[in-house]
Length: 624
Image (cartoon, rainbow, N blue to C red; front, side, top):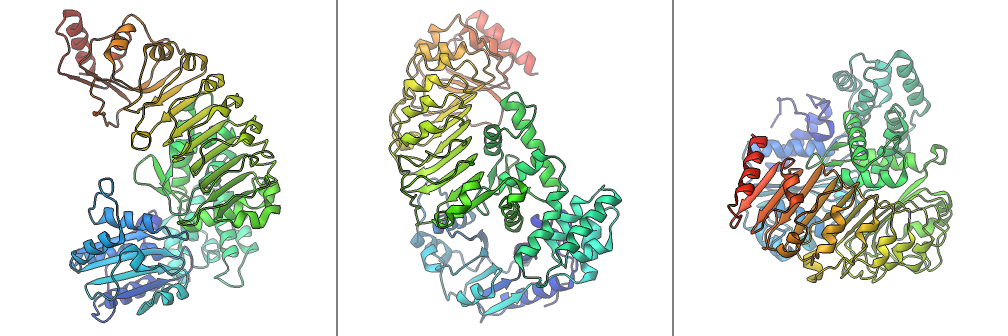
């Protein structure tokens, strides 16, 4: 089999495209031939990071679909921290299994694959042996073929691949061709110094677009200063890629890029989460509100995507980072000369390198599948740390935060604890606190000490009410107690005089369908003068009537408000301004919002009173 059609650009190299490069075509031909061989069930693609293994695998996937060689084709990313559950969920979704309605087991996935007919499974970015039986992937099934990609030939061999294909670097001619496609005026010497690595060619080429001669010469000097003795030397390659970082304009752009490396490998990065981190660290200049911060972060993210340092995510609200680019970002952030020392640790490795933590400013400790992290009993020496992300932690010792007096951003994910550690009282400079999936947590009263806190998001806990001490957070700008009904199955209470103390609050988002609202809560919300964004679901019509003559003191710009006696119904819309009225009369503050409403839902028992229908008529005239 011989391929003559040019390989289209796919994701990682989409901006540059892959044409008829000799090394790529040879590898593609070998893979397609192996897929047609009934005696070969597993194929390994290996080569250094950034050489284009994922892109080649996606090209093969497109080819086999066009040729109808298989009934089903599934591609999943394995990554360095193998998570069997995540791999199963990705495969299940690709095979049309609704993971929200049913749990996925190896047995269930095995049965689905066996019933799929001829199936091709692509396991991308493997760093070690994966037990296929644990995932639910059949072994030695003539109808099931597997392609795996890895930087290591040893990984391919450990998986007992029957055919291994090496994807080499580009020739000097192909390097120049690829570089030329991504720039307006290209310097051959710069292309040559990229040593045939497509990812380096694309990122550096993009970074030098519209740059002057001086920038080209400076980039060439940096590349020549790091000429590798061995093309497989990762650090040398990362230094080469660092040129694209050095050419970024503005410290804000660089800080945003480095923050993206704090997320796990191959994960989709939530741009909203980036905004919350940025608000806490205060690296955005001349930003006066959350909405301004969102716009600025979005602008920075778009700049990074244009430079090929970030990739498109599943929607405009998410981005991804190529694993080699992430390695480069971590490499830069770990350099003390950059003044932004950062570490991303898996498992318990951080505590084996305790000396490095003394000057660390950003630390991300990410748990591994089925390997929960145990924190040290003595508080770590982290007096310089500004941002800390903890995920999959068995428990946080009470004294853990004692020496983290400079901490500004804290994100806790899936921590097994019933209350927040006492040492959090030392975090006087904490600005952003995010708590997700801490399902045993039922006591957060200590947070009353964090008077500088500006952003607080609380999701999926066992909390039954917001403590009165939360009312002391007078500088809070963003509050989102997004309780999960499936976790608590209990009503969540907000005490009186909590909301009214938050005079700086700009956004309040509470979409729980089980929250027992009382009229004083709504009255306190209506009185917030700086509130511009609101998400609430009101189920009790009586206390809505109690606010009938009240008006919003703030100027709402974005809202999703549901007035309904049916708690099982919840509006799902991408619109910014939603107003749902079900079985209710119209209070004055609702009437004031009608002129701003994008989506208005009226159903069942709206009273046909004259003034109501006049308002509705005016709304439709505005919308039309």
